[in-house]
Length: 220
Image 1 (tube, helix red, strand yellow):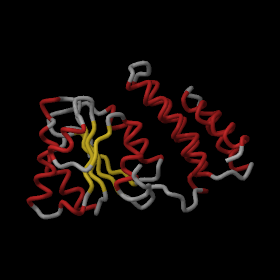
Image 2: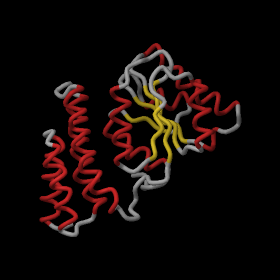
Image 3: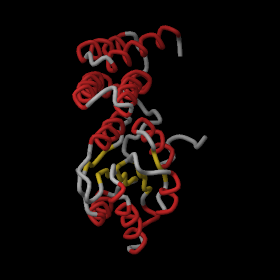
Image 4: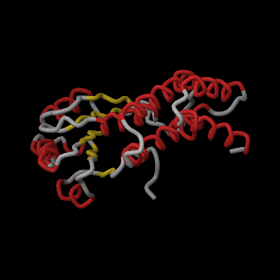
């Protein structure tokens, strides 16, 4: 990647991070005008900017309004770049079912993960919040999903995630889906215990985890 491309992508990331929708759209068009790769601009520009906003949200320096405006800036750029994305290592044609498990209505983190997955090209089906374990399974089967993404911010609802895995096993369809979990009270140890395929401690890490699990990128 040339220095000029890196500089433009950095400006694009900063526009999203600084919540400037008009500038994000303008710079995205500049990417195309210069003949640069659209997917690289999404990955190193738009997604990088949203990741920065997500990290500040995780650190409680950004709040819901800022996060939503950053998402708007990202979508403004994505609307321009997406039609020009070619066959890169993105998630296109891969399906993710995502939701907050039953008993929990905190969905900010889940919404951020959904946004990032959509930017990466995944077809995301959001079941919302307070979702019963069986509904995850039924949706994944009906949609022929690749990944089931489970979220919670409450220790009292963590075990619902294990119930999803148990239902998949009982119905003998566990090998058809990758199951990932996320949320502040969770850990890799918990993920391993319930038989999930992966755990993302922060929203910004969920995309790479998902891509790795479906074979779009190699494990480190």
